[in-house]
Length: 280
Length: 257
Image (cartoon, rainbow over all chains, first blue to last red; front, top):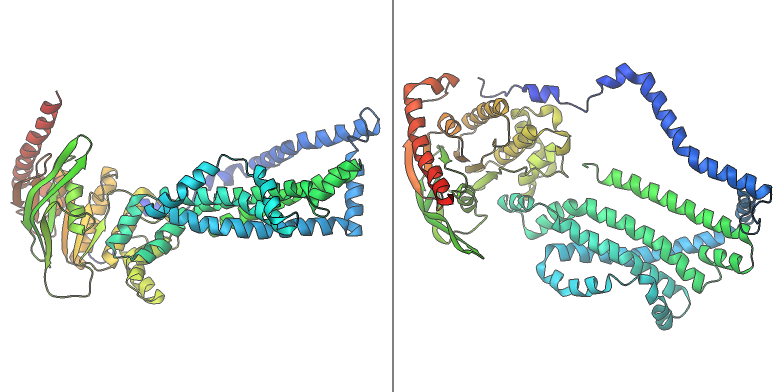
């Protein structure tokens, strides 16, 4: 046996990537099957829209309550062209952005600290776990009492909503790191600071990121709710004012546009997660 | 570098009362000696190793490292469980101890690459641990421990989770690595054959509390052919250790009945 070169064992040679041999053999069938599945997954939403369109045009349901999808699309297009949608959308997105940064960033810092240090945990956990069960929206009146009906109270309620999932996931993420990783770091002489950056942060990142995604979804919800109550502009205001004036086509157009924001942001965050957490 | 375990004891406090895990364990290694510690499960082998590594403190006694002053770290441990960081590539994992010690990125990567090649994972430097098998990950852990050039290597059943074929291959790899980078190794295992095949000396621990029952030199030179396993002296040593360990296992069974 050589002492300098270790021959690659059978294991190393055999186990390069995930096996791709079967794909070669069954390629056409499998791709065809993929397309079939994809088409099938679109079937039920498409069917719903078709039925809705037909029923609305035939006058079987009230067009006031259920305007045809084509009418909603036309209204949405008009709102986009006139720039009205953008004024609402951009304002809501700004509130989400500020509130998210204000709530989630300190939450992650605090969550990591709580997960790592028993003292920090004992200091903050009672407060966080006792306020956690409160549906965050009920504090909106208090926030409006203190900060008025302007921008700050909307940003703050978004921040409150984003804070909780972010802090809880970050703390749970640190707790979930296997203790052997800390032993390895200590065995190699890592300082506290090195253990934080090399073990705590990356080790908790998958959970932390999942928390940030939840927090973002919460932010989207909170901003609309706060705009229902007290705003003249913003996507929530557009929806609420359309309801008050019985402009149901605009109402649906507002809902559709915010739903798009939800889908696009979830997709982007998911892509970001795969980019950052490449090891999973 | 000599490692001296001087009268080490460890008591764990639990709700059922205090548990004596290690009872006055003393031994002294020679330079570049390969020492295997065998014993029944639950005899405090891992506790002993973690005390030697400085990861836990003994209740009594002390650990001393005696040798010429050196910048090299005193010890590095290879863990029984999967201990390779899933968030680092193979190369960064092996370079991790060097990074901790402040070595520049190009230098530590060059050193790490050498050791990754030595354990036969040269093609996998940029892979993440998730993409590797258990055996390959354990080799990354071994490369990592060697890469930081420790004066003493502490290994806790590094091949315990592997199938027998893979275990044999990795044992031979480890011996090759050790002969190229000679240093003291303390190697814990419950596998008597593994202990005799690998070691210069076998220390047999009793069941709880762990005490040294025997300290036996292995009467074979190196390199060892797999055929030593059929040698009369090998079989005699194996039988002797097995008799000691069997007595301990029977005690546990008797106590439970």
